[in-house]
Length: 365
Figure 1 (spheres, rainbow, N blue to C red):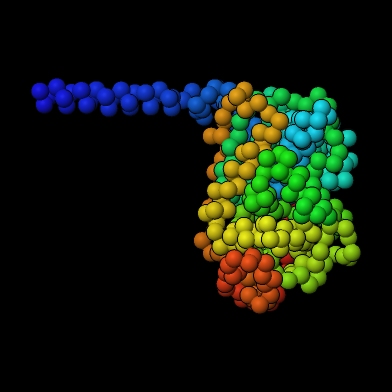
Figure 2: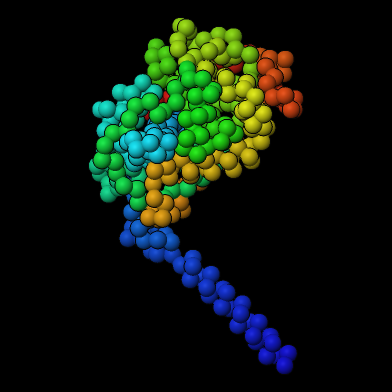
């Protein structure tokens, strides 16, 4: 009797293991190197390898930053509220910013996107992939070049746009907090999730806010996905990196660093300031929340049921260097913080030694 019971138990375990194996059975890709859970994903491996080498040059630099930015500018040009009123409201993550680049890159909010669009177009022409998919794929692969970054999901099968998105749907750095929060609520993001989305600014720079100083970073470590952006936006501003007096820019605490007015205000608004502060010393939360909102962003206007999950093709980013930890830049201390969160005090961090930090422009490869 005991033997029969044991045999039954073993049979059940074997059945479960067999079912699990069937669910995770992988397909050998034609390249002879890779495998995938779905054969359709195999086509992405050569695209990935091509853009890592020839678009991003294996670095978290301008091309990677701008590819991540483009995912947002393409997808957020969509309005369910306008759609409900019977108006054309954009197609979301449909590649329209590439397919109708002569129209959309001329929109004020999309200033500077023409350069990355021009760089991406030859890769789209070279490979069998829709523009809609490529924009999101390149953003995810580009982020993976940045140490400390989380792995973003990627789903294959978006349909390309048949017309340009309307103007006015992408938030501007000079918009009020009310306007920014309302615009992003329209596409499904709550106030605290807007802060999650802005984690992208830790690996970002401005080209045309002040066109005399292109590639000016938003924090002192634009080459790594760390929490410095949230620390440094809470420091008291003192200077402009360029001539100043430009719409959408406010003073920054560091030479060579740009602070957008929208970031400054969101860091100090009662609806978002505590969530903003929570990221300053929580790399784990930082890495968990960004894939969530980016995954939803990449599905705006898209029928997810018709997509294939190919997230396994997205490479893992290098880990943060062991010496990287939250800190105040050299020359700054806790006394320079403009406390905004009414619930908890701003954390204490060590100050980097040496002369006052000066931030260099992001390399343009």
